[in-house]
Amino acid sequence: MTPDVSAPRAATEGRALGTATLVALVVAAIVLVLAVLPAEYGVDPTGAGEALGLTALYQAGAGLGDPAPAVITADPAGPLVPQRADYKVDAMAFTLAPNQSIEYKYELAEGAAMVYTWKATGEVDFDFHTEPAGKGAAGSESFEKGTATAGRGSYRARYPGIHGWYWRNTTRDEVTVNLVTSGFYTEGRQIREDGTTRSKYLDDVTIP
Amino acid sequence: MTTRSIAIGMAAVLISSGVAAQQKPAAPPPPPASPTVVYKPQAARRGGPLTPRTAGYKVDAIDLTLIPGQTVEYKFRLDRGATMVYSWKVVEGANVKYDFHTVPDGKPISASERMEAAEKNQAHGVYVAPYAGLHGWWWENSSNDIATIRINASGFFTEAVMFAPEPTEMEVQDPPPPPEF
Image 1 (tube, rainbow over the protein chains, first blue to last red):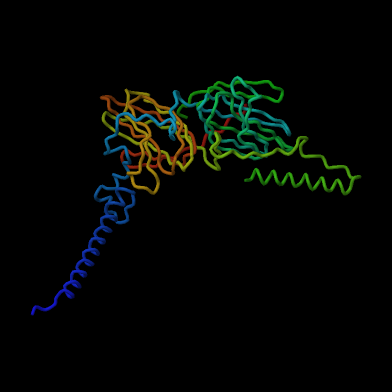
Image 2: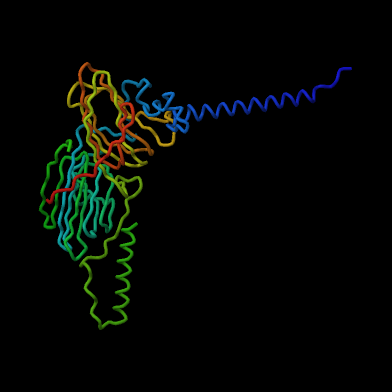
């Protein structure tokens, strides 16, 4: 009569399987720490990634070691919107007497964008608004209004026209509004309280 | 936030002065701070054409010179939703190969996305970062002569990193102050 060995054998197999699983997990963890983290995430806790040259893979990013298709056209609805010419830069300072106001707007084509920052030495009322081409003030839209000492952001024109700010000094003292912008506009236009305007034709961006 | 609290504060002052005037009709009302009504604030609408930022606005300008066959990368650190405008052009030399790609924060490099690629001597555009990370260019001088690429960018980036191929952090500048007009 043969002895029944199935129970102890199953136990041995179970133990072997457990050991194999453990070994596999340990190996996987080592590979993760030594190679995957440095190459894929740029995380190199042991320094092995650096020694093996794997961190360079991460640092190189998508550009190197990865044959690029020769031409990719930017998705029109995507985050990158190509423009035809150099962007322009502009910087202006307006000094306003108490209760005095001024407007300064940019000529932007449909889809043209700009980034801006302005700071005032005192509180001002402001209104970022538009005058659509061919419609004038009647078609004006306001996109942000308030009372503040600073404003920053980006703007992308949805239609051609002039797009910019109205500021009014709400304090009892003189206030200076300092504006700096960069973008794909062609012209800045100052509109004074008496309705007179003054245009500024802007320079291409250059190395400072 | 500040704008709203200021406006509410001003409204409260007007209401309380109105109440005071009703109780003591003989007292002359104090002269208002300005002759117009309280300016009604209007916050920028999400998804609208205007996207306010709470901090930042930097400018950067650099010339990179490549020998034949050499490559370089120059990328900007942008948070999600941060915008930049850029212009780059070859000021000396012929067309260069380039791509515009991303390195998302906290994700494997395989999550990198290529937004544009071509062989040109200039490109201009506006970019709104779809996620936080590094966003910028890889260029290769595929000609037999020296090529110098001039890069200009303005916007809501916090730093630039050049890979040649070792990474070098590049400082970006505050814009110069405006002249009096």
